[in-house]
Structure formats: structure tokens, C-alpha cells
Image (cartoon, rainbow, N blue to C red):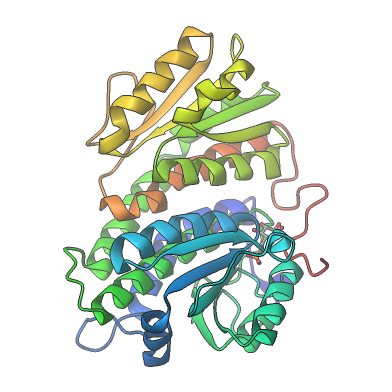
Length: 362
Ligand code: G6P
């Protein structure tokens, strides 16, 4: 029962759940490992992935944002095309389905009505479905053909944090397993790389004072804020901006760096906070260019980079992890910035207005 879960010494569930992320990642490593220390995954799931000629990820909210990262992981490693769909839009804008589709439902609660409606429809059409969820025995888990568990422990705060990182970790494991099943050789050991991620997350959750200071500096009085990034950083920007708007009520948007010039740069005014993720070496020059463009128009820029991409003046430098897994690390400061922004604006961090943890109506 959710009410039995103690906050312990934490003032809010959200902060506790952010801090739990390294343990969740280590638990996932344990759960998806066999006695020989190799990746362990259900043969039926491996078969379903291998048989699919296209994967359709369906989800809502934060789980949708995790799906965007999952698409990249599966396409890059397992070489299967993936589409990501917002559940509530799926029936109106139904994609043309491939000959052998596999549906992946990502849902922390496993009870989201919008996602369930799609599951019911695809089952009616006779397709196979895999649910990735934090709640074994949930509706989406029971009604799908297969389930992968997140092992994140109960998530109480309405704003999802540890479920997002757990979803990406499990999607990475699924991508690797699918690649191997197809004989694709990868220079990537997910269990080892996730262990490095867990340590990196800890380094960041140990820097709360820095995160609080940055939140106060950029987000204490502003009405809006923008997150910019390219490549996978863009997807993490969508999640970072969702976190911020959910709990601090700051109007926050995530933009693709290259798209700024096509309209959104018009929003930049003197003092507009722009948080830029620059974790990807292959787009570092271009995102740095975007930072200069918005700074020249008066934006207060805050760059978050990595050891490999850092530059003088960057506010937060993330520990190095495998490039496939940077979202697991880059999202942590964004979660903490949202938390401290909400805290300093006297918002109800764990129970933001108008939102529910699990939305069981369409
Ligand atoms: C609600 C929550 C979000 C969550 C979304 C999907 O809107 O407030 O935090 O991301 O539902 O939930 P699910 O349980 O399906 O992942």
C-alpha cells in the first residue's frame, strides 16, 4: 500500500525517489542477470522481439519520454525500426501497421486508461504486446502477452523520476538482448555500463547543494524556461521540461537546438532561462552554437555537459558514462532542478495541482 511507504528522513517522496535511482539501477542489474553474470531475459520475449519487423511503443507522459530514448536504443543496437506513439492519439492517428508488428506499452502504474485502450484495440486486431511496468499484476501487465518489470519499488510522488530511469535501463537491456539474438555483435556490456551509471547517479545526487543553487539562480522568479538539446539530449529536454512544469508550474518547453531558428527563438527575452544539455560529442559544436545564439538575445544560459564535452563556464558537468546511457545521468540534474524550483516556489512537490499519479479515465 502506497501509504505504508515511509518517507524516512526525506521531506518529500520525490527527493527520496530521485535518490533511490542508483539502487534501482543496481537492482535491475541483479534482476536481469543469471548466475554466470550474463544477461537474463525471458525466451518468449526474445522470440517476440526477434520476430517483429517493426516495434510500436505506446505510452503517456514520462513513460512516453522514456519511449523516445528506447526507440534510439532499439534502432541503434537491434536494428529494428521503432515508432513511438502517444497513447491517447493512437486511435485517431492510427499508424499503418507493418506485417509483423510488436507493441510495447510502457507504463509505470500499468493502469493508464489511454494506454489500456490501445492495448485492447491491438489485441482485438490480433497483435502481440509487451508491457514494461513497475507494477506486476497491473491491468496492462495482465492483458499483454509479455511483461518486463522495472523493479523500481513503489513510486509515490506524482512526478515520475525513478520509473523513467528504470524504463530506459530495461529498454537498454531489451535492446542488447534483441541484438544478440540476431547475431549482432555489440561493443557494449549493458550490465557493466549500468553499474557505471549507478555510480554516476550517486555522484550527482551528492551534489544537491549545487543543484539547489542553480535552481535558485535560474528558476526562482521566472515565468518560463526552456530546455534545449540535440540528438538524445533533446528527448531528455522533453522530460526535464515536463518535470519542471508538473511541479513548479513554470511554463517550460523542451526544444531541439536546430529548430530554435525556425520559430521558437522568438520567445527568448532578456533574462529567459535556457538550460542546455550538451552531453553528445557529435553535436557539441552545434548545441554550443545555439547557446551563443540565445545568449546573444539576452537568455540566461545554463549548460550541462560531460567530462568529454565540457567547456569553461558550464554549470554542471556530468560524470562520463557510455554514450547509449547518457539520458540516465543527464536527467538527474533536471529532476533536482525541478524539485528545488518547486520547493522554493512553495509548491506541493509530491502532489501538484490538477495531476494524478495514475490516470484511469480516458
Ligand atoms: C500520469 C502521471 C505521469 C505519468 C503518466 C503515465 O499523467 O501524472 O507522471 O507519466 O500518467 O503514467 P504511467 O503509469 O502509464 O507510466
